[in-house]
Length: 542
Image 1 (cartoon, rainbow, N blue to C red):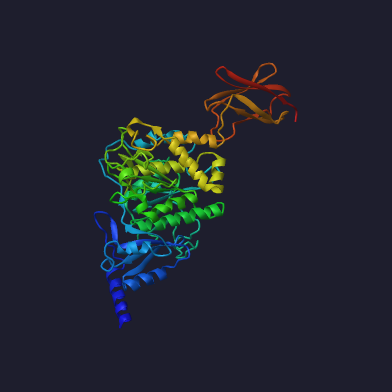
Image 2 (spheres, rainbow, N blue to C red):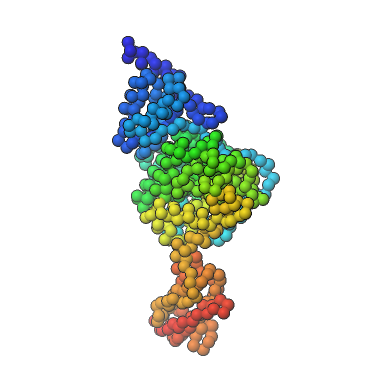
């Protein structure tokens, strides 16, 4: 009789609560769902048996949020487990690493009038100056750069995104088979974690965020993103458990790329977080969610995150995910065109790294249109796009290290962004850097790590010497300003003339064609102003 009662109670619970999310409208907390992370060798079945033995038929397994990390979403009967009794019970159970409530996300957007100047933020962060070196899309070694955007959806057919949506190389579209064996069938562009489907939700918030980071540039229409040709991996999310699933998906793709030296997976360098919780929350109150950023970072993935659309001190009241202390998350608040923090934006000398343009951001809208958007949601993709753009710099050392030392390379990129923040009095005391995003400054900092050395003016090496049809000149300069290069014969006649700016990210080397020169001694000169260096080279008959 007792077993029958338990069975009937379980059936009633399943009927009443399965897939029904009880969301507190004030906080976004799903009051009948908990996320639980188990230790590696702990099974969920034993934990469920213990819980349902205490309160028959009261707890069920709704879904696995991250199989690799043993994280599961539980749904329970609040009448059987009032208050936080189940949460408290789970946290003291053997084999439970962490537990927390599930939450519905609040996407950070404030619609506004479309008459403000369009895309003012790109110039303000120094993007056009970086475009003189690279417009994004590929590393120096040819790796296709990917940004993963977790948001409420996207219009994959917007004309200004064509060619910039990531295509999973391990999947055959439409064959109904999980070709790459990652647990997702036909996940060709990413995944709709909201509906557990490969059919993307069409929503405007995600679309406009994606447009800032990676709308196609130089295509004769609409706008350009921070990156002109980057690939965007789209992950639709609405609840915290779906964030965790999406992050696991990203980790799996980047890990596979690292382990196969680029033969499989995706070279994801950044994820974008233009979302948070309704109420201020510290990261230690979301231990499972918060732990994902170090896991992403271990594979070489940074996260650009926008803080709350509220005038609150995040250091004092918290915010997710910008209060997380991971070294692999970079955080921004919203700057307006007056170069001040937008009043309805969070701040914090510890938690918020810098400001970034957000207010009056012109981006993609539904039905192939464009519109102006506001909020920290649009500050975040400027930052996330900047991360991806820096990976595209023409520096083979940087590209190689991104695969051989992904974690350290991600930290190098983060350090350049923090160190390159442009000081601004209006952000002093409000952010950790006291300034705003400047991707050009970050590029300048990376030059030292990417072979862009500087030193006293000099000709380091001429080879081959003697030469026949031509020769190379390796040189050094104290800066990256334009220099004059000349070659004279023994009579003082000029045989070669050029003016060029030394490369910031590669060896400073000049190739000179001498195939039509007569045999003899020639003199190579490099100069700027009163500084001059001259060295001889012998040209002989081949």
